[in-house]
Length: 129
Image 1 (cartoon, helix red, strand yellow):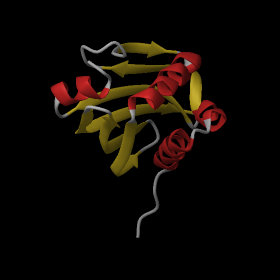
Image 2 (cartoon, rainbow, N blue to C red; image 1 turned 90 degrees about the vertical axis):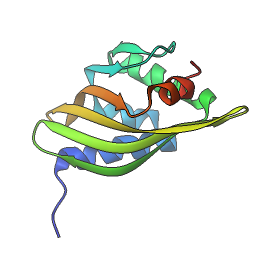
Image 3 (cartoon, rainbow, N blue to C red; image 1 turned 135 degrees about the horizontal axis):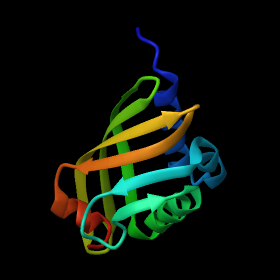
Image 4 (cartoon, rainbow, N blue to C red; image 1 turned 180 degrees about the vertical axis):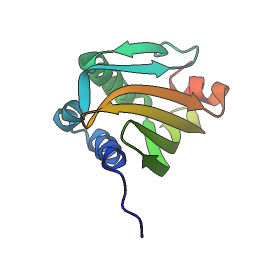
C-alpha cells in the first residue's frame, strides 16, 4: 500500500472543507496569492485572483446546486492532479462532466489551479451559462 503525498492529502482536506461549508479551513489551505484559471463562456469563467476572490467564487456555487466527487488524486512536491466529476442539480438542470484539475502547491498551500472539463457545454451549464 502506498502512502499519499502530503500535497494530495491537503487537496483532499480542501475539497472536504468546501463540501462541509468550512470556509475558515479552506482559507487556511489556499495561499493569499492563489490564482484559479476557470475556463468557459459562463459568468464565473476567467482568472480568479487571491484567496478572498476564490472564497467568494466558491460561495457563489451554493446557489447553483454544484457538487464534486473525486475519482483519483495524486501529487508530488509541487503539483497535485485531481480527476473528478463535477456537476449541478437545480430546477431544470441536472448536468455533470468529468474534469481534470491541476494544482500547484507551495509550502503546503494551494497557489494555482487549472481546470480542464471534458464537456465544455455541460461545464458552462453547471455555472448557469
